[in-house]
Amino acid sequence: MCSRLIHKFQTAEVLNERKDIIVLTDEAHRSQYDTLAMNMRTALPNALFLAFTGTPLLAGEERTREVFGDYVSIYDYQQSAEDGATVPLFYENRTPELKLENPDLNEQIYDLIEAAELDDAAEKKLERELGKQYHLITRGDRLNTVAKDIVHHFLGRGFQGKAMVVSIDKAIALKMYEKVARYWQEDRERTERQIAEQRRFTGEDRDQGTLNELMARLEVLTTTDMAVIVSGAQNEVEEMKKQGLDITRHRKRMVDEEMDEKFKDPKDPFRLVFVCAMWLTGFDAPSCSTIYLDKPMRNHTLMQTIARANRVFPGKHSGLIVDYANYAQDLPCTREIGGCVVQGNEARQARRAIRQSGIGLGHDRRRDPQQNGPDQPGHYGGAQWHQRTIGQVHRLRRLCYPRWQDPADDLRKIDFEALAEKFKKAPHKQTDVERLKAAIRARLERLVQLNPTRANYLEKFEELIDSYNTGSRNIQQLYEELLRMMKDMSAEEERHVRENLSEEELTIFDLLTRPGPDLNKTEQESVKKAARDLLHKLKELLTLDWKERNDSRAKVKLAIEDLLDTGLPRAYTKDLYHQKCTRVFEHVFAAYAQRGVSIYSARV
Image 1 (cartoon, rainbow, N blue to C red):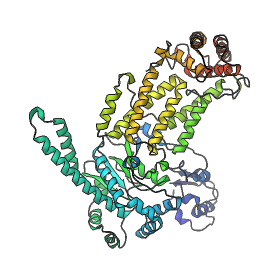
Image 2: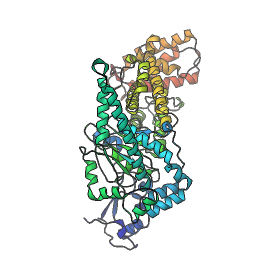
Image 3: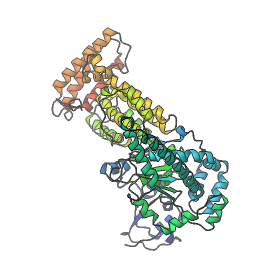
Image 4: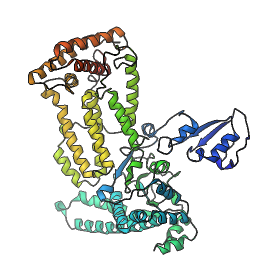
């Protein structure tokens, strides 16, 4: 085995034509699509090329698959979190809440920003080319708002891990350090005054809980060390002085101290670091749990950066990406970025595919039931189609709705008004929102599994999360909307009692009436009776292997058609009748394994 950099292949000449050569390529993007890569393939014309990459699904990196062929193995964020190799990542967009003004950046500007990591000359070009947009990002009042919020957010987190502040360039990293240090000192002085006020009280008049919280906050404010870590450059002292900045003391620390080891050490008080390019790739500090992102990024650079917060560490249940630049559209998946590696639009496409599939989500595909028999390829009632499609839907569900959340609470026991009032005073709003989202998602998946016509609840939930991530709602508005949704779900859970039906019977009733014709009360009661009779008859026909036997499936399908033919009111047209027969059969196939074994018999 020999190791080589791709830059060794400067000319296109054949070096070896053997067929037993295997080329292993790490970080297979960009450099593997251009001249040097073509030279390497010319040099080894019969070699087998095997690529390793962490960003094959990102926009702009699709060529990895074109150049190297199809995937041999995929290990994504979701699998990594399930295996315990990483922790989930959550995304918080602070732009709307802070009312920050951010520019729209084009492809050329992104390229300039990435090039600015190289040297001071590139940073000067960045400022020159960006012009007004650069000053919009870096103006003083905006940086003050971000710095003040960083102090507030850092001190209010649940898990007090280490954190990174990522700025657009070296000068802004220095400015952000100074501004955060100023607000940090103000918070320390304010906390000391609050402690002194609490200590004036004695006995029952003293709020010991509040005093303990203030003392813990002061401990963090007093002991926390923060520093700037940026690459060196010629004439940097003079260049920074022109902007009123002193980099000398920061450079001295970078030279004299082992800053990387201090940040990696969870016991070291060096808890907050300010960077623009360094430590964003290839640097692991497992106790780092938060990335404050105020720099436009995309694709593999963004992936590498957010991954700094997903390392496993005792007591760290998740990482958090706090976005001040409003670049949600560039994140791999802004709803739960640790749970999947697809972009937002790909996640929406996958969710749409789930809805269109109809398995467990109740969407009518409206194929003519007369075209194919129940066992012909391509028919929605066919056993092979069901097995194949259910597998696809499970994979899509796993991609779009990752399951690393806490079990949902019993919604009927929640005092929603008290919860809303408590949230207004909560110091850790993001943690509370994530806990609420997890509870809702877990309960929603169960509700939709039991009754596929409830898919609209799931769609509404995803729309709420998307609207928050894109800045349409702030965190308070999101929380209030989620609470309203929980109240609606609680009412939905009790609807079968109001309809005088069991949960199973209600599902059949909903499948027959959503959508359905306008029914009067008498006709609705007829549909309810048909649902009860149908369910009773079906349970007699569901043998141990009914899904595998053609005759058993045919009996079930025929029973559905006969009972609905006699039980449904005249308001159902012939076409609607056929659609309902198909839809009920699909539900029965997905929900009932055999007699006495179904999704309803396994209720939690």
